[in-house]
Image (tube, rainbow, N blue to C red; front, side, top):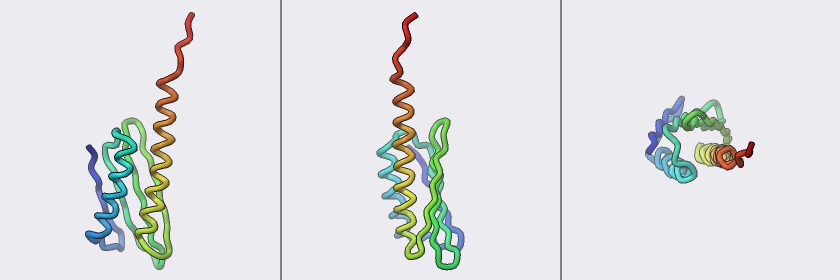
Length: 105
């Protein structure tokens, strides 16, 4: 199981935002059972909404950020999509390394 830390800079982290982030992170949690912690930071700067997240895996950290001019929910969705691709790539690399055939001497 993993912990999710959500912080906001110049943004009130509403219950709706927390729920949306938890739903998205649960989907990422189904992709990998090695996730230990997730740090999500939401920021607002002028008209830009920005979402950043760092996922901690054993021996690896994955980072993604996304910006939306309209809504924070769009930034969170784009960030989650980026993280899903990174987790998939990480799993593919791990499986490829574990399945290399041994060379007989």
